[in-house]
Length: 429
Image (cartoon, rainbow, N blue to C red; front, side, top):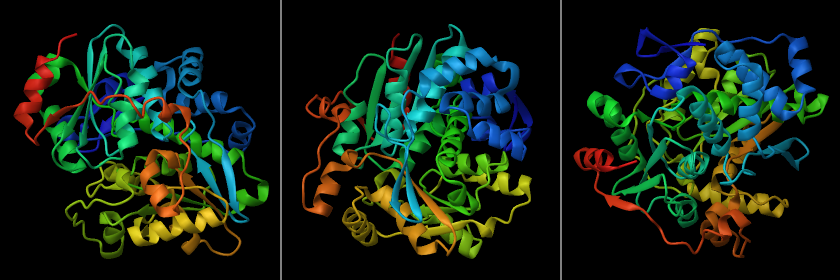
């Protein structure tokens, strides 16, 4: 597999290099040189396969002979040990539930495949994973890499701006997992990660890598559950399929668009954001004008400068699609609250991120279309928020209940790269 740096096309790397580097020169994202295509007959054959076998085929189409078929099947089997079911919400709308993994969020798919792939391609190298999280990435990455040999993980998150239960899931592990609460917002955390990757001496000294959705291995893994969702639909539902994606850093939407480039017959997508609406405004005005990030009830989407957006623009350019045709919506907290309540009355328990995707879908779905919205996190991960919205208690799954009373092991730090750099260098194996 060959990939190029979106900021410097002359920098070309293999899949193994991209997984280990994370970012290219100038903080450029890696993007596949070739976008594999499946014929209608090949798509039909894929849809008849089980989730693991199909996913291995999809990933091998990108990665090629860098990982042989047997190893790929083993990596996927180790990573995807949980389902991605489609649950009916209304006659014309279903929810793709991506929160049945160990950390109850869609990030389990990408995080766990990346961990398996990195161990496969890095041999015995010592690696430091540095990543930023607005909520769910941290837990998924921490659990995916927990106890893996020769890998240590450092996760930055905005202090006080993720839910208490999200924090408990990844800040109570210890061992090779180090967590730092930064006294700022997610964009500041992300900027600190980028500064670290610009520091060549630091990168070399600690074997720096990233596990954000900027890492190509995570992104490719996410393609697989779009095929899995499609496989569960009836022939009628597949005819005019619309998928609404709750969007923060835009990795999930990028993966869905890549599924479409491969030949999966998705009619259109909707990018659903909260008040951090840089992309909807850009699609309306043609002007990229990020505002200061604001805190919302859907905190995992509190991102005003989405990292994956250049990949989306590259897909549209490469495929000859019209960017302004991408569906979009920005949903307020007030509407999110009403939508969680509305879904509850329909018998479906959701949380603000999923509710935003549902709201955008319900408002834009046309006659004859079938809609899927992505449920990206279990409602119990936002227990306090959801209980406040619904006025009743919700139970905790065992994965959360067992960590709820554990002490936090986090470090606390200002938005200061020098202090972060000193901390990274001070870590010992």
